[in-house]
Image 1 (spheres, helix red, strand yellow):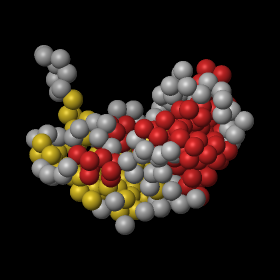
Image 2 (cartoon, rainbow, N blue to C red; image 1 turned 90 degrees about the horizontal axis):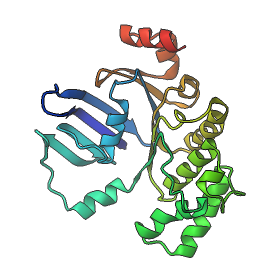
Image 3 (cartoon, rainbow, N blue to C red; image 1 turned 60 degrees about the vertical axis):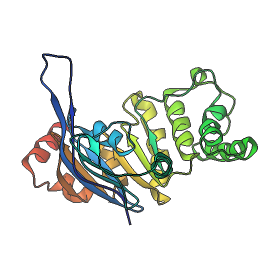
Image 4 (tube, one colour; image 1 turned 135 degrees about the vertical axis):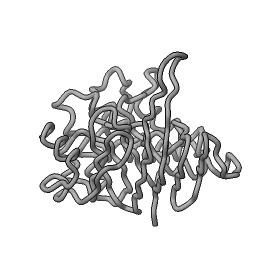
Length: 258
């Protein structure tokens, strides 16, 4: 089953009057199969984060189609979605998509445990006791079983990002999106977050990861996609992409970062 499929997705940002519109996505097409780990690499400004955010409606699109779990949710022309669907039905599908951001976005006045249980209780309508027990297990899973009552200010950046991963997993998603989850971390903290992500990948989670960590992409990905100027230019298994890329732009980018 295709868990994510996009066809010719386009997005233009219109700035203040007098400024030229900025076309960020220029026909981005990609399919991610169930259980597949796909890493998107590419230079800054390629449209990677905008593409990821378009999958769960954090960004609207102007043109193209977006499928989640083989269900067509968005078929847009000139910014208008032609798919008629009840909002509740679309939201139920989108709840299957968890996301971890560059910034941790934890509530500073809530403990780590409270951050993790908030969405399951308020959105999934889980009982507090049930959500709390699951949160404890997830915090153990990400190596923070001893930090349940800590506030974000008492945690390192790597620990906060692991809480954010546990928070996303608490919603029982079938798909996980990661938007450069280590970019805001000090170098010595990157490994602990990537370790949790590798564990998810080994456990069969469908993952789409925007990353600048080439080592992670090489080791954990089933497929690596090079994105440039708003489109997917090249896709292949890590060994091929990193050792014998076909597109000149891919070769140029990898020579600059490796």
